[in-house]
Every structure is written in structure tokens, then in C-alpha cells.
Amino acid sequence: MTKKRIVVVGNGFASLFFIGDLLPLPVFPLFAAFLRRLHSDYDLTVIGNGRFVYFPAIPEFIIGKRTAADITVDIRPFLWRRNIRFVDAKAIDLQDGGRTVITTDGAYTNDALFLGIGPAFMADDIPGTGIYTFSPCNGPDAMEAFLSKLEGLSEGVVYVGFKLNKRDGFVAGRGGQMYECACLLDYALKEKGVRDKFEIHLFSPDIEPGAAGAITDSLLERGIILDYGYEPKAFVEGGMLDPDGTFRRADLVLFTPGITAPDWIRRTCLPVSEGGHIDVDRYGRVKGLENVFAAGDCGNHEDPPPWVPHQAHMARLRSSAAAKNMREVLRGGDPTHTYRFELSCILNMENDALWMHVSGDDKPPFRGIFPRHSKKLVTVKSAFERLYLFYLRHL
Ligand SMILES: Cc1cc2nc3c(=O)[nH]c(=O)nc-3n(C[C@H](O)[C@H](O)[C@H](O)COP(=O)(O)OP(=O)(O)OC[C@H]3O[C@@H](n4cnc5c(N)ncnc54)[C@H](O)[C@@H]3O)c2cc1C
Picture 1 (cartoon, rainbow, N blue to C red):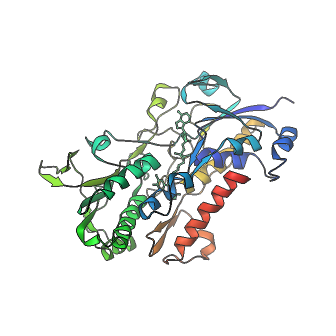
Picture 2: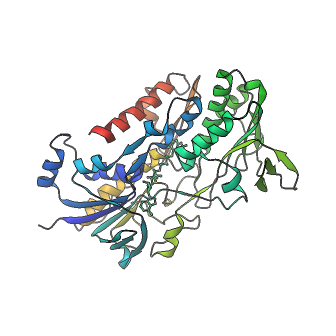
């Protein structure tokens, strides 16, 4: 029987969860590549840059607990152990309804395609974003650049903010992460004994002025000034312009714009949703194309609840369904696996933590064995990270 050729584009969370679900473990680290050569039903190729970044740990750069090296994994040994071919390239086009992926290093054909190409940030939405703001979402280097600027300040005004893309009916943006950054910044400045020399503001046009809740309480307890409802007209040298053109001083701005899918998909055969995502159905199938699936931050949802965010956690649920469905369609069947909607994330403030959780079926995380508000969750979050990075590095 000829093996089915599967091409995976991207080597971030969605793609690696997809691979984990597609290939059954046995985990025999030493012999895995050999055993998989004997047993595999699939001929798998991953197209990417070979570098996995554990984004959820980037805010902890602020308190000096993590560095770029700690959270970056060379993913090639993980792929080698699974007998997966790696192509160090960027996808730039799709042809034949997805059967051919054109890359910077040639063309790759497939029987089924999975796209996990991650987000693009709408940096043109507010003028000056790319020049005058830093974003943890642009990766470890951008966060380190922010921190080296901060190091150079003995006092000042720091704005931390986010904007969301809600045009596809869900939360395409990084709200929770920016709350976390603001609280960790407060913690780091207190540790240095200079908190009283800095103003920290949290702004977002997507939060109603006067909004209340556990996160708002945590921000207020830390003396963080709430600019809920605020959207600058532009980011400029030394600050921001208000909608009426008034200048507002900001010595540093940490800001993340709304999320959409990477621009190149708009020049391909892929369908694009109103909010700019790859248009997928409830099975993770790209609409209108055969045997093409997508998951993670690049894809929208069919009928999402309005609170569902882009998260590694959601990427896991979606990729798992997509992997099962791809197996079914490659066997000639129809996809049957849908996925749950769940927002689940630990907001680490270092001296405290909140488990932010909402789910479509009201199930609590891990059957409710963990507290929802406790400093102990900082250790839990760290344990999830260590386990996942151990799995990628060694299993
Ligand atoms: C600061 C921060 C904190 C976060 N905290 C949390 C958290 O606590 N909990 C949580 O669940 N989520 C969190 N997230 C969100 C989470 O990291 C994302 O939802 C997740 O990374 C999405 O996975 P993805 O695979 O879609 O995208 P990514 O992980 O970004 O992966 C995309 C991959 O595609 C590759 N790629 C892109 N374009 C191409 C191309 N043209 N050709 C080939 N390869 C390509 C990239 O190199 C990368 O390998 C956080 C994010 C950030 C930025």
C-alpha cells in the first residue's frame, strides 16, 4: 500500500499538536525513528523554520525568570524521531486546490495538507505601531528589546495595551497576555525598589470603561492605571496622540494589535473570512478545498461563542480534531470530529495567579482539582511548560 503524503506547514503549537495526534505513541525515544519507519501509514513532511517558541513564557522575561534560550527548541530532532522529513523553507503559495505547496525551496505535493502558520498582527491598524511600540507577540527578541529600553529608564510612564479583531465573532487578540505583562512589570519594578518612579497604564479600546472583575481588581491592587476604552489615534515619538490630537506622554509602549492570518494566504486559493482568517469549518477543514485542514491562530471558527480566544490551548483542541478528521478522509470517510470551545489560561502575576476559564460545556479545568485564584498556580503554569518542553526535546 502506498503511503499517504501529508504536508504540514508551520512548526508552532498547532502543527506540533497535530503531529502528536496523528502519530500514535509508543514513545521509545531511542528506537522511535526506526519503529516508525516500519509502521507509519504516512509519509510526512513539515515545512517551517525548525525553531519552536513557547510563547506563553515570554511575559516572564520581565521578571528575569526566562530567556530566549529557555523557551526555544530546535524541532528537527523531534521530527527526526518521528521519521518526518523537514524542509527549512517558507510556504509562499498553494496550487491545485492545496495539492501543491510552493515554498522558497521548491514545490511539495501532498494527498492531504495541514496549515498551522500562526498569526499575523494588524500593525497598520494604528499608525506608528511598528515603529514606536514593542510587542511580546513578536517573539523573544522584541521582548528583550523592550526590556533593554526599560533598563535604560530610571523613571517614566509605561503603557501596556492591546486591541482585538472581533470581526469573525470571536476574540482574535492577546488580552490576557498583556494583563500578565502589566502585573509582572509592577512586580519587577517593586523588586528593584523603583515602582514609585513609574506609572503603569493598561489600555484597550476593547474593554468598556468601568469594567469590573478579578483581573481589574488585580490591576487596581497593583496601582496600575486603567485606561479602558482608550484607543490612540497614533503612536508617535515619546508617546501617543489621543483621538482629538492631544499628545500623551509614554516613555515606553508594550502593545499588541488584533490578530488575522498571514498576508500571503490572500494571494492563494484559500478562502478568507471577513476577519482575515483562513475560513475553516467545525471539523477544521478549509472550506471549499479537499483534504486541506487548518488550526491555530491562522484559522477562524464556525459559529464560535464570542468569548473564545486564540490560544495554544484552543490550538490543541482544534489540531486534535483536525488530525482525527484527516485520518478519516484519507481512509475515504467523512470527518466527524468537532472540538470544544474553551478559554483556559493561568495569569501569572508572580506574587499571585488567576486561572481564567470559560468553556462551552461549563466543565472546570482538570475536573476542578486546582484552585482558581492562588499563588500556587505560578508553579502549575511552570510545570505545564516544563512538561511540554521536555516532550519536545526528548520524546
Ligand atoms: C506573549 C504570549 C503569551 C501567551 N500566553 C498563552 C497562554 O498562557 N496560554 C495559551 O494557551 N496561549 C498563550 N499564547 C497564545 C499562543 O502562543 C498561540 O495561540 C499559539 O502560539 C498559536 O499556535 P499556532 O501554531 O497557531 O501559531 P505559532 O505558535 O505562532 O506557530 C506558527 C508557525 O508557523 C510558522 N510559519 C508562519 N508562516 C509560515 C510560512 N509561510 N511557511 C512556513 N511556516 C510558517 C512559524 O514559523 C511557526 O512555526 C500566548 C501568546 C503570546 C504571544
